[in-house]
Image (tube, rainbow, N blue to C red; front, side):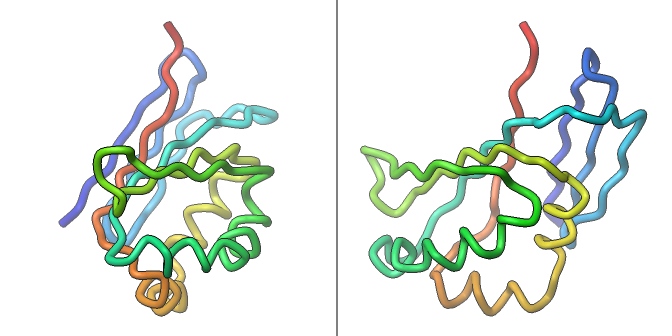
Amino acid sequence: MCLISFRIKNLGFAYHFRKPIFIEAINLKKNIMPTVVARHKVRDFDTWLKGHKDRVEIFSPSVSSFKTFQDSDDPNSVVLILEVTDMEKLVSMMNDPKNKELKDRHTVIEPITISMQVPV
């Protein structure tokens, strides 16, 4: 089982992800737009890149914008930096079984590693 967990004490909330992704939000403060970094590998970068419009469509209800990166050392390793407007919608989208077909079509290889900025 994949477990992704992060806690941001200073912002007063925490999320715990398991596969399938379940969410627990503790004292979620409104009007916070967290930046989320998602990293995963793909079998074929060109195929994955052609799915950009699909990602725009699927992320739009929960993300105001995102940037796409490719590792310089591994062309099949990608990073998305997401400006999340609704974490619950994002998690719901990630849990939606119909998106498994989309990930397969885009050659996504799990696990998908999620990271969040921490205040320093």
